View 1 (cartoon, rainbow, N blue to C red):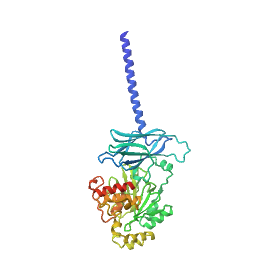
View 2: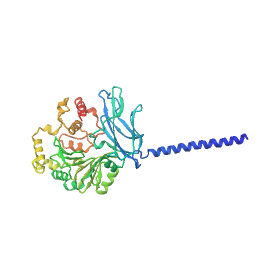
View 3: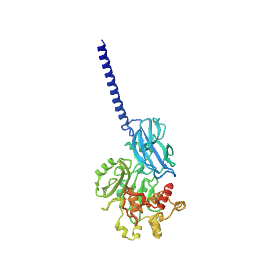
View 4: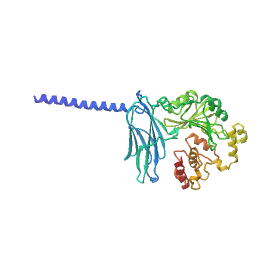
Length: 428
């Protein structure tokens, strides 16, 4: 009897262990399934969520302190940030609880939990915006993650798209993507005609204070306005051309443009690729899977549109070019010609030679401040992956790009330059 009882107990024990094992596997499988597409939920009740993070660094943080942080959403690593950056992470999340975690070191991490509620149909938009601030301060690198104002003036390259459901995002945000294909095809060789064509479709372009370029009201469209070069159109979040826009993932953009035109491998890099369509040069800049901007210019058979400056025009008398510009452009060109050479070549000519004061820079716009910061790096030959900055500095006679962004060593900056960068960054 004891023998049979032992056999029965053994069978029950084995069955129990098998059940636990099977349950564990099931739980693992369910856990795996729950993380798949968690940031790009196909749930019909899912809502667009944008997490805007402002990263601030205190004055007394040691230079040896690690400042790079990793961002996790619902346990998934979605990117990195460094001090003084602003980024917006866009996801499509199902109703329920979610968590953002920031990790600086193994011993230093902080998190913020939030809940996505079902859309009751009462709000104007179903999108949810959450602003957070991550701050590192004090000599010991004390950190915190708290609710904060949603960041403004965030560049397109600092949007991280964790969802492919862009149509829903655009609809929820109330933003309209304008197709500029026909406008560009018909007017890209003449800046005056290009401005007029944009005006006809209710896109008003304003000449910046420095006269270097035109910009649309929402900042999504920029046209370079260097007097001695042909126009280059720079598109970011709210404009498209040839069926692509900066909300799309890189692989999709590459496929569409390859089908419509010719890929120019010779001048392309891993972050900037060039296509020729209808004798128009389309340069797309991306960071990983995310598109940053699209540059469009007339194809000249030379380099990419980020260096699309017509050398023959540079040798011509500037009065010839002024005849093709609007009255405002001609006036601006005349002012530039009469100004001091340094002031036309530099935003802040002496930023490497003395400590600047707030009074020295109080008249600068935010765009000029950004240029002034990068001007200091450009003086040391830094090559810019951002096509706009590459455009701008390539037009300057003093600029010689010789050091890639990855190889650039900030130790080459002198004490004046470091202090002036800090001053300008506070005003940016």
